[in-house]
Image (cartoon, rainbow, N blue to C red):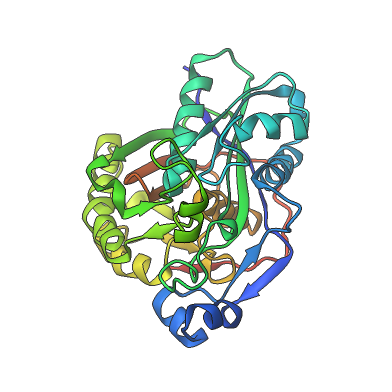
Length: 344
C-alpha cells in the first residue's frame, strides 16, 4: 500500500500588521487585557483587493515551489475554509484556475477551524486509493477580518487572516500519515455561527441592521467543549494507532487562544512533545492556523526525519480532528524571518 505523507509546506500571511492597540480601541479593552486573555499580540489583515482564493493560491504555490512540483502534476485540491469567496462556486475551483492546476479536481470543505485536518484526511484517502505518483494540495485559508464585529471583545481580539498549505504525496516506508480521527458534535452547533447569509436566514436589510452576518461565538461554551473533547479524542487516536505518548515529539494545534491551549496542554499527556504556537504574531487564522504553524516550524528546521507529529483542529460544528504522521524527508526548507513560539 502506498504511504502518503507531507511532501512540502507553504503559507502566506498578508503584509498588513494589526496590533492589539488598534483592536482594543474598538472593543473597549486594552492591549494588556488581550495578551492576558489570549496570548495574542498582533495579527495580519488581508488587502481589500484580496479574497480567500488569492491567499490560498499564494500558500499553495509556496508549497509547490518548495517541493519542485509543477501545478499540472496536482491531482486534487482540497480547500478548507469558512470564509469562501462566494457561496458558490467552490473557492477551490478559483484556486485551481489561479495556480494553473489544470488536471486537478478541486472542492471545498467547511469544518470551520477543524477544516484543514478534515481536508487532510480526505485527501490522504483519495491518494491512497489512486495510482502512485499523484499529489494533492491541502489548503486552509480564511479572511475573518471581513466577518468580525469589531465592537465584540469576545471575537474581534482573536482573529487574523492567512493561508497555509501542504502538498501530500508518496513518502518512504514507515513514514507519512499513520492515523486520523474526526469527531462532530452537532448538538452544540450553536456555539459558533454566522447566522445570516444561508438558506435558513438569507441576508437582507434586516439581517444587516442586526449584524447577523457577523461571526458569533459563545466563548465559555467553546472552552468547555475543547476541554471535554480534545484530550479524549487525541488519546483515542493514539491508542488506536498503538503509539505511546512519549513517542510524540511535536504537537501542532489549531491556534485558537494561547491561554486556553496552555490550560488544556497538561491534559494531553505528551511528556516529550513540543507544542508549536504561532498565534502571538498571527492570531487565530481559522482553518489556516495549523498549516501556517506547521510551515513556520518546518522552515525553521524543527522536524527531524521519522519524528512523530500530531496535528489537531477544533472548531464550529462543533468539530474535532487530528492527524498523526511520521515526518518524512521533505524538500529543503528555506528559513524565513517569521518567528515561532515553542512551548515544551
